[in-house]
Image (cartoon, rainbow, N blue to C red; front, top):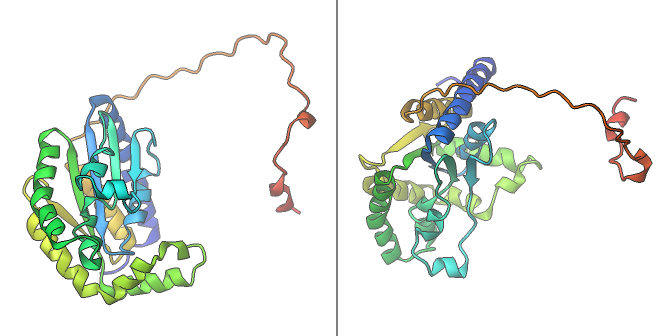
Length: 264
């Protein structure tokens, strides 16, 4: 499959992002609750897709949730408990940069959970998601799929780029040697959690541009949003001045004009 050229990609992305803004307004005014789960291989492009989805959205309405490793207290809780507290209220969107599916992926492969905990997750997860949907939450689950060769190419690109090296954790690097283990874990996860109530949607992510466009277009097509009439805004006139005098600038600490050095 050929790579989507930049110009049509950027044009369509902007159009879709404008629709995302409209969808956000529908979520806000209707009181809808939307949860979007982003899962997939390391370096499959989940973060880039989340960035494009949220780029023009109001952070008070659209929240990105990327939880760190659980604390000792959280490990003693019901597994889904710490995720439940981040679910949206009325008029909110939550984008989960990885989710409760950590247990079916990295925790399963790396041995961070016991066989009993894993089996319990596979039993409880479909029930948990069914309860979310039954309560009116709009749940969308996207799996970003990438080949082993493309993943390795992206890893090597990050290794040589000081601006992106932070994206490579020891866990990411170890995923290279555990490719088949992660594949089997993903397949088993799908068997148990790809349900009619909360299905998985696979995003082919060999081409990041195609993946972003396809994922956003699908989200917009499956959420039952409607355009909301725009508000009539009117800029008020400034009242007459009443003698205010600004204090001298030299009384304050100003940021140096670094930009001026670029013009010499």
